[in-house]
Amino acid sequence: LADAAWREIDLRAAATPAALCTLRGVACGAVRVLDVTGSRLAKRGDILDLARESPQLRELRCGSLGDNGKWSVRDIDAVFEACPSLTLFECDVGVKIDSRTGDEERYEESLGDVRYVLGDRRMRIRRVKIHSGCVDSAHVVFECAARAARAGRLRSVDAS
Image 1 (cartoon, one colour):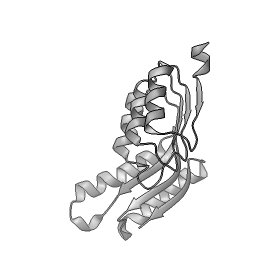
Image 2: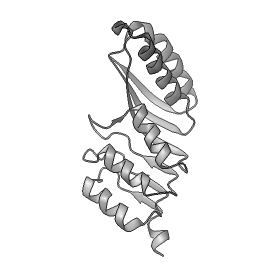
Image 3: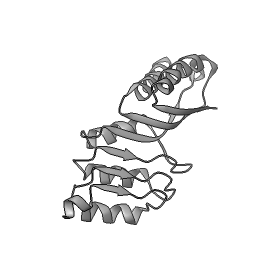
């Protein structure tokens, strides 16, 4: 009964660090679907900790977490590594790309990060924010974004 009770958790606009910590303790790894969309008090670290304790987690929805709620590619990798059973991860993504630094290797790595995130079929991105975007990368980013949007995996792109 307890296992069935904790399979699908809807904490939209209500998740807090304390609630996620409590859920981690009482759900005992039974969570299969977790939705914390719009929970501006939820922290990425607390969500990741819960994912690590949820080996059966299939869907994780955590978009619209506020100004600090954008997930980096490193964060996304950590979620998938912590929870290999995940088949859907919905979130906002932040990536920094800048060719003006002169570090060609880092620039290419950043573009690769965008391609990876926008091409991953497990991802549903509400918004990807390209920080300090440069003109050189805009073509690549929007080409990848168009493919992801056509596939239903991306809703919006914000480049600054």
